[in-house]
Image (tube, rainbow, N blue to C red; front, top):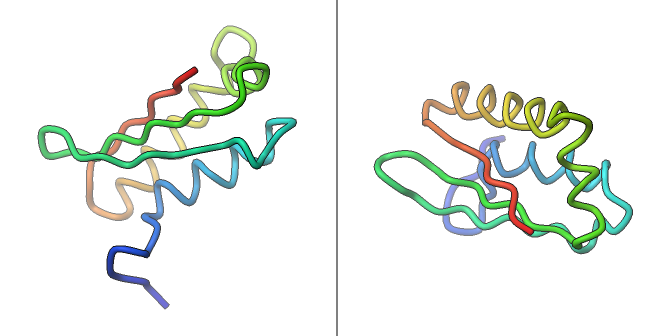
Length: 87
């Protein structure tokens, strides 16, 4: 059931993408770029400018929850990962 290879999405990316697409008004504008930096994975999430506030949430609570989910998925996969929200 596990996928491998360059076309397989990481579990962290899949979690971030599913949740972000559910929260925004324009789910087709959600883009996630996955890069490696200093031995950890960095997910850079960008979306339509009007939807960024929905991802951040009140006092950053939604963004913190999304980062927690990505952290849990990365721990389960055995890697370190962080999530950056880009405008």
